Image 1 (tube, helix red, strand yellow):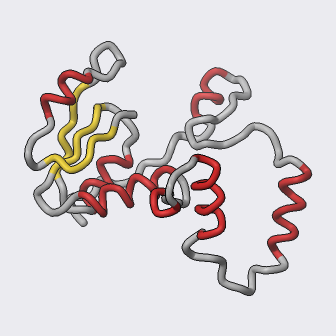
Image 2 (cartoon, one colour):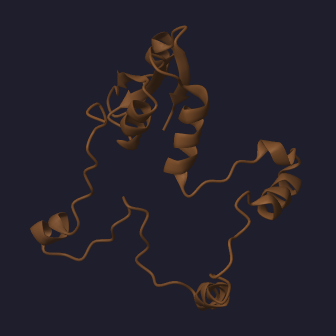
Length: 150
């Protein structure tokens, strides 16, 4: 666990306070708007079923998504947000002493996910705030199991 970087949450309000303006926080996937009435109704309806376990495999949703996109249901993966899906990919593909290639700086959770898998991060510096795709390709080795381009 010592190799796992500590999570540092975004600084809520500090920039808005500094410029004395109300700003919209988008970095944490927050919306400045309240939920739509239809969303609130769906939540209220679902609340009547919280005493039952949901379909943990999401089979109905996966089947509908597979049908919509013309793929096999086994090719559809669900997760609780992008971090979960990325974690699943690294957990499945990486192993101790393997490598995960990603640009840097980038989404900080890549480092955490990589460390939890016991893999090594191969950070490729951004060039003028852009991915250096050629350098990322050069960073791939026999030990590389995942490449994040984000």
